[in-house]
Length: 165
Image (cartoon, rainbow, N blue to C red):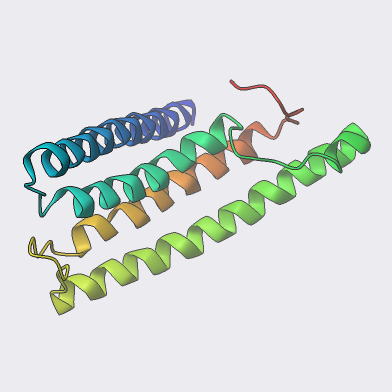
């Protein structure tokens, strides 16, 4: 069981590293587009579309790491004004609801990707990117999010807010 726990944590961390790489890649693509358009009057046909996909991918792949490190924005007015028993109960409840949402999101995301692949949908730009490729980031991010919520449920501890692991 400890091996699966650690493997899940490693997969979540890999997703975070990929998300960080995609943010750096987006910065490079946007910078290149600005220089190309402003100084050489030669805009690219690919930078805007690919940077959009990279930003979306970074959000979905990085969300599980945000759950694991308590980096999401939280409103802790209620949590700070109840006893530890209620805090623990609310932590389990919120993580269970997050897991249910993540499972639904992942299943429907996977079905959407499969349908997009079956229909052969491509982007409307000149690149004609097969849309199942960027859309595949949704169920992959959903799987990582499911793992993150399962690990949060296993941990079961109360997070006081304001600190990061």
